[in-house]
Amino acid sequence: MLETNFFPFPEIKTQRLLLRRMVLADAPEVQAMRSDETVMRYIDRPLTKTIEDAEAWIQLVDDSLNNNNGIAWAITLTADPNKLIGNISFWRIIKEHHRAEIGYMLSPAHWRTGIMKEAILAVHDFGFKQMKLHSIEAHINPANTASASILESAGYTREAYFKEDYFFQGKFLDTAIYSLVVDR
Image (cartoon, rainbow, N blue to C red; front, side, top):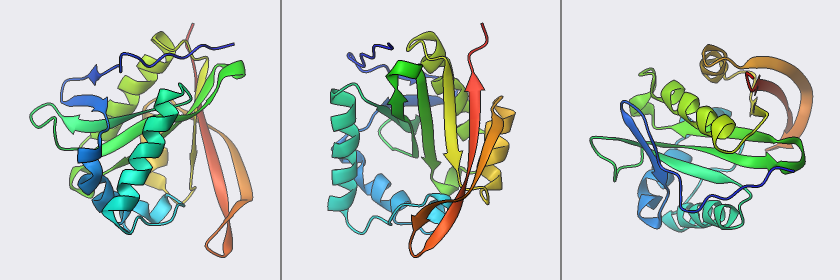
């Protein structure tokens, strides 16, 4: 079975990014993203309404980290590491299968800049090399063609399409599942 230990917290640096631990001071940026209908359009979760909601979400992320059940990074630019511009995580780790689900979001000001692909590549490299994952999956709303394109350009393959997979806000929605298996 996969053993996870995220202490000390593993910061990840890339050419443009510092992926660091999320902290309560990030709540205003989290609130801005998670309350933005454009950002949340394909993330089928309720909009965050208050800073306290954002702080509670950060606390959930931290609880998962403290229990070694998941890890989330604040995406920041190396030039401004205190300003969260997005987040990326392994939020569902299936330890007995050495598999994790990746999730992410980015502020619209940074869309179409290659930042999310850079973050995905860095995090999946960490997942395979440090965590010893065998595979990483992403569950996306099939209408989110931008997310599908980023995943495919990062080497992920669409493995499944589930019609009316879950119920959200009064309707059944589909799910597309992408996966990447370690290259051994």
